[in-house]
Length: 378
Image (cartoon, rainbow, N blue to C red):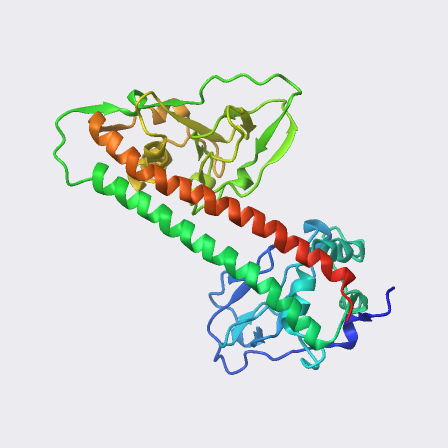
């Protein structure tokens, strides 16, 4: 081990403060991406006095499922307010923050290499728990505090840029949806009605040669609040839904549809045909119909309620049939109105694409900065 690598347990200590006075009201958990989040646990009738308290700059982790999940759920509190976590969690803090920065340590915990190392040290239990001693025995480079703060500052510049871009993407999407609702939802006299099949095709016929390499998108790559596709891989095509740029992907299963998983495809090469899960429906705009209109429709509450009402299948695994969606009734749309909407929506969607690409590149840079921690010297 390099000279500047130190044993983690020599720099941290457990904290076992309980919520005995019931002053902490908020109960949080830790997701697999290492962020605190509101707990979904049912705490009705639960003795909250035994729950552990987390203060600013303290860490909490769940060592129980590392072997199963291949990651250690761990996070550092940045909140000025105390909150509760499960009694099963470990809470700890740095002994001397003039020697080891909490933010620097959280960067180390965020490394993929750290998770792989943690998985290596798990026990033989079916869930693969990580013992506290094993966590303490793990080692990391600890340069001077000045160097640590310099590294943290550089990392935070990238992280904050990602957050700003994500906030801008959200505002742009809200703007596009507001324009759609203003022009096409409510407050208008309906003279003629038609069905959605006049405007879209579902699961269009496209050809990919078997075993050819193509972009593949999983259901997990679709987000619940944004058009952005979170990730994609290249792999041999075997089977699945097929789509191209400017198609909309709509989750067809419970609970993904109810949670709002929808994506606008704009990450492919020109004329590329991609493939993905059969658990989403591909919605393609017909000639003279804006693909941006199709995506906004797929996000609309009325349309989603109609789709959810058509679900059939066994409990917990209901599905929507794409042909049922084509029967959705809506007012006929004037072509001039559709063209005007397209001209206003297009620059919004293009800007979302630009900012989404920046987020991808910044995330790569973020991962690179984390990987470089292993080679840090004073």
